Amino acid sequence: MQELVLGVLKKGIGLESILGQLGLNWTICLGRGIGLEKFPALIVNKNVSGQERKQVGSYLQSGGCALTYAGFAESIDPAIKLREQLIRFIEPRGKLFSGTGVLWLQQKGFLIVGAKQGLVNGKQPAILLKRIGRGLLIVLPFDPEGAFLDQRSGQRWFCSEKASLPETVSVVSKGNLSRLLFNCVLKMFEHRGLPLVHKWFYPMDYRSAFAFHVDVDNYGEEDIGKTKRVVGGKAVWFVNAEAIEKESASLQLLQGEKIGSHNYCHKLFEGMEENLENVSRAHGFFEKNGIRAKGFSAPNGEWNSGLAKALEQIGYDYAVGFGLGYDCLPFHPVVDGKRARLLLVGTHPICIGILKTRDFNEGEMIAYFQAVLERNLAAGLPLFFYGHPLKRIARFPKVVWALFKTVAGKNKVWKTDVEEFALWWRRREKKRFRAFFEKKKLVIETGNNEREFSLRVLFSGFEGIVAMQAKEVSLEKLAGLRKAKHFTLNDTTAKTSPIGKKFFVKQLLGKAGNRIST
Image 1 (cartoon, rainbow, N blue to C red):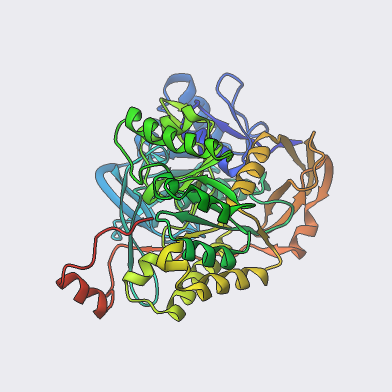
Image 2 (image 1 turned 45 degrees about the horizontal axis):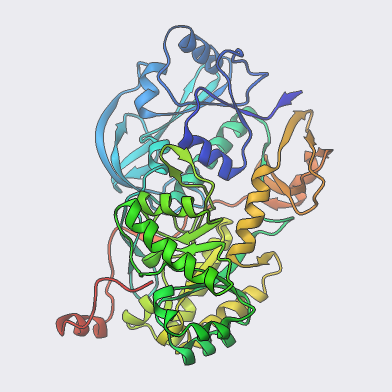
């Protein structure tokens, strides 16, 4: 039987983070012998020479598949020609980009002669797929490990029918990066005629998860009360301690709700010590009021290593935001070169406040959020949104009601909150399985006995979700389940569009700021 496990040449915390997030089985392969019967595919994440190069070359010639990065490609095949290039973004073109939008990178990379899929900076082909003997070599023009570990933030423009919407988010679109790597692995398994099996992202056979959280930046008793009636006990409230400290009795308004920290001072500092003082002061305030805040919402969605170290020291279970990742699966940040215990849950960055300043009316706001919901659902991404009470949710309650109503009609969407989802994801991380393939039969080995954890199987253009249980599965039945679709996401744009006459007038009068408090 063929074990369905990726061979990786060396450990790398960035690659391990992506593979763990995707739920793919992998193992270090050098020193064990690289053969077709052992590994369906390889990830070559280092330069190879001598015996290693011979092993990889022989593996490819005999029909194996490998994914590598342009910086290592010439060590595998000297015939590959490269030219250095600053890669701002890669425009999605071709099936390797199915389910992705614009892949933002802003890092040094390469142009590869003979590349076919994707467009570097919207102009020149990005990814090389090269036949070597009976095998397949896929070469990415950038280093995905370094990209995934990138902690920079910058302004991006999010697509809508009315206007492009600006927000400061992670420079690297990590959700699109993870999906691209997954598609590359799938392509290699398809070349081998083998099924790809990975831990599914949601409980049982749910196709996505929906959660809404509230950031209380400013205290307003009436608006908090209105917002509570709107979200109806279905959200986590992240409260700014400084804003509410003088009115601590007002915490009674949120009695029975899940409460997290939105810092003391609504600000991100550069260094660890200042951030730690700020985070600790808020944490002490909540403890004094009998509240154990398990989660943290980053002010303005921002992120840096100083904040990460502070949150890790305090011991938060999870953080929400979009300065490190947005519209993506959860992952653990890296702190001082090590995987943090803290789980980062990336949310969609556009909220009612941004739409309001861009002159969106209530109907246009509803249309925007429903479009994002449908887009993320089609891609299998989480549906995580957020908002603020003061003059936003309280003023436009129908926007949030419409979002909740739409989700209520989606039977395959898990209705949850970010805290419950983070807890479930941590349990998912601990689950282990092995999968083997023989004569269109899938054999699963696992010690899991909890029915809510599942595996997704992709084979011959079809996909199905099966319980993570020790069993045999006939892959012929997958054809009747769900045919995989090819599509790209209209999520962000390299070009801005008009943002409304009203906003331009505000700019001219000096009334429109560059940042929306989040």
